Length: 255
Ligand code: PGA
Image (cartoon, rainbow, N blue to C red; front, side, top):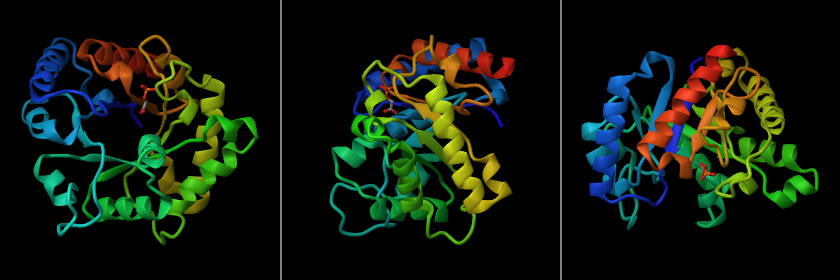
């Protein structure tokens, strides 16, 4: 496995800003390539996906959302074929902001996950407990419920996907989990996947997200803790995200 590093831009960047970012990113990877040793993925908003996809080198393209139908009367939504045409490979499913602000529930998230798998995308399933759930000792229960809500009824291993452990209280707060807490949650998720799908599940990257920055990423991205990071605010500048990716790769190599 190689470290997986996602840049979730959320609702940021106009076309002009996105083009500037990609030009800078491209020059950084041309100078010192991350190469085949890491998988970097940018998740720009829909309105700049085409501009980013046309120019981007040294990273894959991801989308922040999808609607689980190929087309139809779904005002404001975006379908899997629309994303495929732009070269999108990864799609976020169940990010805490969509669960908590947009009210998306497991049954709907399962439809998205299944539609993505059926169309050959790589879903990135996000799970994580709130501060209150952690305080009351329900972290494991919440993780299992969220995993089972999306994966529970599948008969076969879905093929490539990623799981992001993102404790809600660590997202955008500047207060990350400790690497020990992250490792514990990742191990719990790994155990669920093994139990559910057997050996093939060992190839599923399980990454950590929540206030990851270039200085703390090395604590999270290493064998025995997690297989990568999903990054929000520290992904919004190409230089910062690139440095973060380099630091992650270095920590991963050290093992
Ligand atoms: P953050 O966001 O890095 O700003 O905490 C992470 C995420 O929402 O994926």
